[in-house]
Length: 325
Image (cartoon, rainbow, N blue to C red):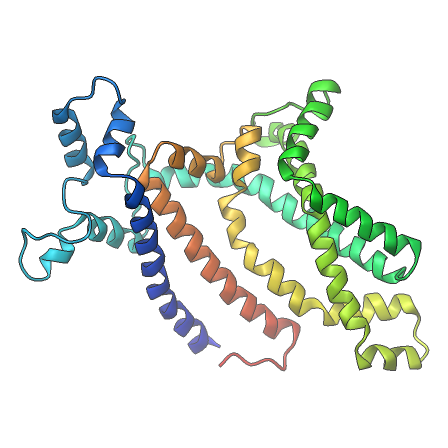
């Protein structure tokens, strides 16, 4: 298994280079270093000298990807792309265009992001699986029918509606929790209750239907008919056999998203004023801060690759017959 993990990590290097290249190309197709300087310095009353000085201070005064003024390999290395990219593979993200240390901001904002993303993930996973198993247990009845109707209705509503409706009803009308903001320690709980509830509800429709499909597919297997022929009750068949054999597809959809929880929820953090990595990324995109955008994209890609490896490893824990080769 160790060889398999090392090989997968080596495969990750060209993937990360490719993601970084695509991010760089897309960003500078619609922006130039001069645009970034005007955005940071202020569009009005910015002088050409100030733009040149801003680019020199932040390393944007070189050609983007190919330097005709240099010789040999320096044509590629004396460029913005090379100098901004190599340091990221050593996890040196540098400074944002406003001068703040990106690594420090990531560490500082990691806790707020996880404090909303982890409860949504864990609570949602439990609720969706229990809801789906209940629908399968009462399949072909009114419980299953109205459960599917409810799931479709939940899927048809935009997550923005849940956020705005929840803020209006629970915060503004009933005054049960603050409408937005964030606190540290135990004070954080009152700010996180509403985002967590909305996060679970907004994902209930699609996830419950997905788990219901998995469980129904397992119900048609031969081992289920064998278990029933032995006289086992439907409850034992469902919770003791079907749930255990459905763990691999469940793991495929859940373990891989665990590392991405680190990056937080973009929309929820922005609407609820939570100073996490999601709102940090949104602010960076709005201000055309390429240093932050590339760091967050690189980090997200790396975590996604790690998530895929963890998913493969988890298969061997669920089913020992699986070998990593």
